[in-house]
Amino acid sequence: MIRLSGVHKTFQVKDRKTRAWRRIEAVKDLSFGVEAGEIYGLLGPNGAGKSTTLRMIAGLMQPDLGRIEICGVGTQEQPERSRAMVGYLSTDLGVYTRFTPRELLRLFGEFQGVDARVAERRGMGLLERLQMKDFADIRMEGFSSGQKQKVSIARALLHDPRVVIFDEPTTGLDVLTAKTVLDLLRILKAEGRAVIVSTHVMPMVEDVCDRVGIIFDGVLHGDAPPSDMLARWRVHSLEEVFFRLAADAQEAG
Image (tube, rainbow, N blue to C red):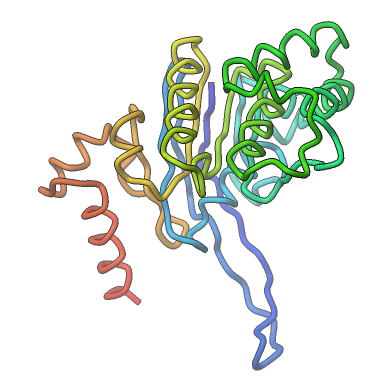
């Protein structure tokens, strides 16, 4: 359902000290796929190219080279059609706190071309699944970060996407709220959706992800089941793999 083939992305940035422009390769020859009913863990430190990759898959930016397909649809050739099949939960997309969850979901349903009655039914079903139905008509200005995160998840899933991208879905959440999110990931998998999860919570990745890829300096390492990654590196946790890759990158630099 998701295919990346030879994807490259570069940026021109200005050095703060010298004020000279320089070219940064954010993503280098990236290729992997995610099938229906599969959860893929995409890991990497800040600045490694992880968020750039997720934004390209979501259709928020285009690669310089290579190809990305969503359910067989090229993101460059048919950007609107491919984007409509993706539900994207971003780390930097907040909620409008003057709205209630019901109002927000109704508005985003209109943005996404979802029939008002369908949006209402789906929205309330998602809020119930996320244990937020009792808060549907309360303005969100007093909500906790966990409650806002749940509303953001409902918004990302409102148009019933076949592909789901969750960027750091459990960051800042308490244990019970994080468990609700993890349970939802398993439900999305059981429904046959292709799911990509980006997180720094390694135990969560080992628990819910079918395969894992780790990005360092724009290059993908691994792309294998967590157990295979551990066996290959002869370690006991993905954190150890992460640290090994960081050490290798530091030595190479």
